[in-house]
Image (cartoon, rainbow over all chains, first blue to last red; front, side, top):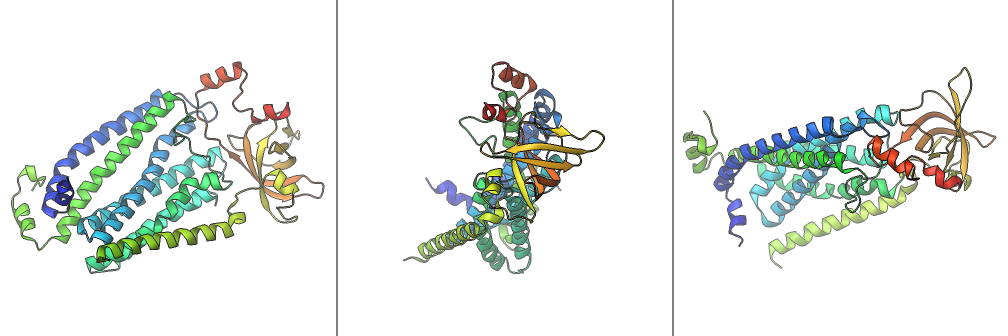
Length: 253
Length: 152
């Protein structure tokens, strides 16, 4: 039962698997994001209060979602790496950080662009916005800490501790709108029993969220491949894989 | 205990410790993390007189009064229990509407009114098309009229 899991721990296996999956995932993601964009910008009706301005939700909400779920992946991979001494888990964490930071940045920027006309301000220091900004800084801290070590193993273990400590921020971000008075509104979609958004506005959002997730996995697969190459550069399978420039290995000259 | 088990317990303890520290810190800063006070908080004395703070609540339907020939507006803000009058001179945000939530940044005047120098619209999490909103209104459930129920 666990053989597939142990196989994932084998660098050449993961390298080939990721190389085979990445283009498929990327294309499905692009199609879904295109459908979601068309649905969100064209098919969905304008909001009764915000008019067309609400449509930024189709980028903002999926980005914010990804900023947190990528962090969860990063922290989980770090914990697996620390506990089971699984090097490839560290590679996944390291490959995830810049992607997560980018989505966090996108969520903050789209939120500010929406906030200026709707709230009347680009930025306020309420609990939701501040905790999301802290998430961005934790991502930066993680990347900076990794870069501070020349030895990969030390970078892996030290940054893993930071990633695990930073997990405490995730429930704070999610529940900030419930625990405190904030300017940011409460969650719309995660009220699963009764989302406060009509169906013809909701489906493009869900398509976008799935598309963003697949996009992340595709990018992650590509980034993990290069991480693995860097970490295993002295291994024999790497020189074999690189000398064999056949397309089925996902390598083009 | 195997080394792996040790590391598992260690990781768990680190997470538990950090979570505990976060809970204690956030509880200590509870007041400061509140972005705004409701009229009831203000009347109960939560917001110190003479200091700047933010007041949040729903704008009562029909309470918006404009000074002719100037930008000055006055409106009443309620949390369904208590009501305060806000005085403001400036541009109101897009989503400012009677019946909608607002957050005003300013200070208390001697006559009990709130002088705001910034007014932000607080959006709720409801999204719907104009047709649906109209339909709800026709059925007697106006969607942006949170105050309708209050005034009855």
